[in-house]
Length: 331
Image (tube, rainbow, N blue to C red; front, side, top):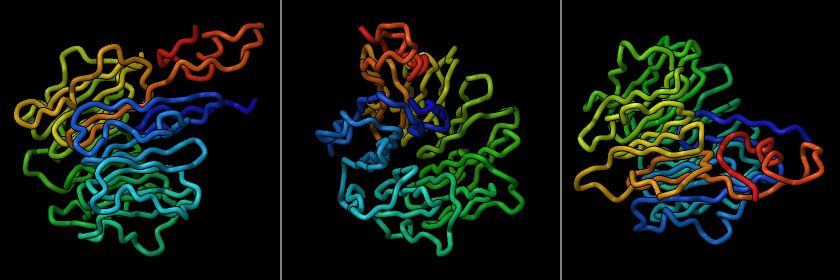
């Protein structure tokens, strides 16, 4: 059997892994006006390695490199190109999608009113991508960032002298980045203080941009949010710890804990569509992502592998080797 490789963390939705005999079920909750919380037949039975939520649609990447998209499709954001080269990462913007090819190139489809799908010529050696309301970004192998699309709030003006970055994400109209030294940087829309990075934030493991707020996963497994809190999206639950991934949505925030449980907050008031109401009994989550008014997750299914550990029986110990401590069990 080939070695199992896991890369469990970046921000919400980014779970890039390779695990033989692993399977996931897509679980979604919140607004389903466009069926965005209910994946099409055939998607949930796939071995998926990444999922990301847009405003009203989702995009997912399968182990075999196949891309799936569902939900609102008014601008063709769910019309995945049939001639895509092997894909290594996908992200969903408001009404467009971005894919990073295994070659290091980038391609986009969907809405293009502000040039968000006009990938800059010569953009290569990309190792991560991000998608906002109507802008996109790429992190190159040398740690520099390139942005394109709508720049009405300066979200595409990468700060001069930013330094080497190792993770990026896009909010609606702002950008966030984790620098190689563990500090955070934000630029773009400052209307609600979403770019006012706390001076006492400390070292971060990951950072995520939302509609008008920002969420950071700190080195100690706790979460810090800043910016708009009109719907409680920046009010981190007291005592929340052991977080491995965080995602900022339109008006809410989602966190994945090390034990595979999911915690959501925000989305209160008139914009409440149930996006923060985690389904009862949800366990074994491996990735989460917050959309405009909905939340999606990848949940490890009960799927027993072969006798990996050579004990003579196929049981939960074998599954643990493949999936790690994500809460999935075998009978």
